[in-house]
View 1 (tube, rainbow, N blue to C red):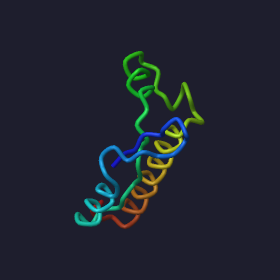
View 2 (view 1 turned 45 degrees about the vertical axis):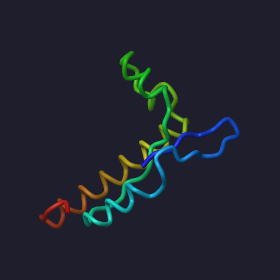
View 3 (view 1 turned 120 degrees about the horizontal axis):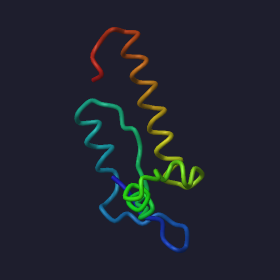
View 4 (view 1 turned 60 degrees about the vertical axis):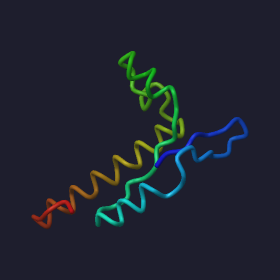
Length: 86
């Protein structure tokens, strides 16, 4: 799922821990990662300024880039194999 980073810099699991990973495993699909909860994602979206461009080094931007890289890598493998993404 997702987490929020508290004022002390430690992650706070608002929705429990590991649910997304468990769901991916049960579905037989790769787990891509977790995105920290950050109000700047919504603010940037509303303003048309993606957080990955406005704050490229933020934890949420790093997580989004890592997930995009994993997705692109998986698509490449599937395309080379000529098979299904699952």
